[in-house]
Amino acid sequence: MVLQFLVGALVSAIDIGIHAMATVVAISIARAASLRLTETPRLHLMGVMIATAAALMVAHTLEILVWAWTYGIIQAAPPGSDLLYFAFVNYTTLGYGDITPVGEWRLIGPLTAMNGILLFGWSAAILFEVLRKTLEHLDAIEVPGKPRT
Picture 1 (tube, rainbow, N blue to C red):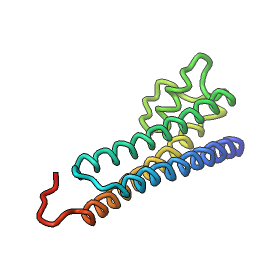
Picture 2: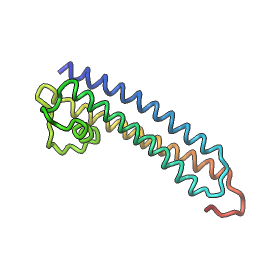
Picture 3: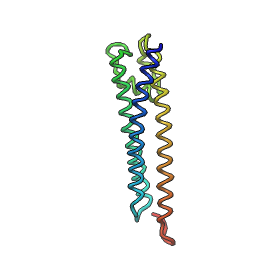
Picture 4: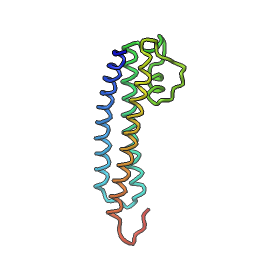
């Protein structure tokens, strides 16, 4: 059981590092975009949010790949299992249950889910902050008397 927690903690730490880098990228996107003057604030906002969400989706995919790679190393799933699918189902807390971990690694699924929940919450916070900052910037550059487009 201790080994399961150690592996789970190590992979979670790696994923947190990946997510921290994605946060830096997302914030950089938002800051770079906020320096631009725009004639179409709504389209500008959409572009910033799409770019931020895309950066976070890439991060989550990389984090799931780390879990899948780990599952393969520790042989957490029955032979022949689709490890990427298994990692996605656990990380997203979908929990179909069609693939279950082998007995000695039965805690790896919940540890993966715990990591996924944490990082999805972090992503939601980033998206909210980028939205807030972008709207704040657009309000600051709004030309009086000119309607938003």
